[in-house]
Length: 216
Ligand code: Z5A
Image 1 (cartoon, rainbow, N blue to C red):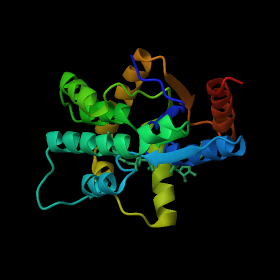
Image 2 (image 1 turned 180 degrees about the horizontal axis):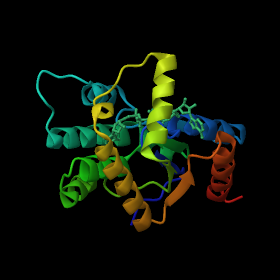
Image 3 (image 1 turned 90 degrees about the vertical axis):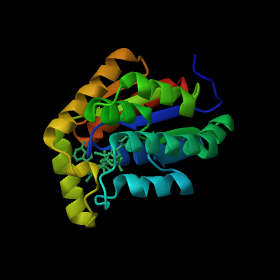
């Protein structure tokens, strides 16, 4: 049984470049206009300590390779800090938390992508996360190549550096995508949104779902 809060916990998942950041900000603006307090945050990260961990996780080059298990443990260390410092207090006071990635990313990337044992991930999940689960998870779904091309387009404009995950091969991202689809088939909180649609169409779909969550 997941814990009930005054606020709603909504996560945005999917591969690189599918539009998570763009649509989170759009959803936050919609909810703010309706007088709802919204906290927009991301994983790994979301607090000073968790952002330090994020820097290590995403840094493309280290003097030694990061082991998959170290990567997994760091994801959960950052998550526990984020939950205790930001997510739970916000949900308790009635805010809606919109989070760019959460534990489904760990199962997809470290489980399906890296091949780490899924039952070990579940054990860590229950230690780090307890009974906190998202109320709704939007899975923005697009072929890997579409997301990669969009992310490339964005980094050409912003000049952002390549991170450690972006150096992985296509097959890795295909396994990650399969992971997200398996999770969506298992959990009713998932809403799959076709992210190849125009941004307007994606946002019309999100708006309908947000109204349902609000109980309109
Ligand atoms: N990771 C992990 O391994 N395990 C974990 O537990 C967690 C994370 C929590 C964090 O990267 C990395 O950490 C991630 C997984 C790993 N690595 N990968 N891959 P991140 O979350 O910071 O970055 P990202 O996931 O790679 O996302 P992104 O590149 O920031 O993309 P996005 O937020 O999904 O997309 P966007 O920036 O909103 O949109 C990209 C561009 O497309 C932009 O120019 C938009 O204007 C455009 N766009 C968006 N939607 C559309 C539509 N519908 N049509 C046309 N253009 C669009």
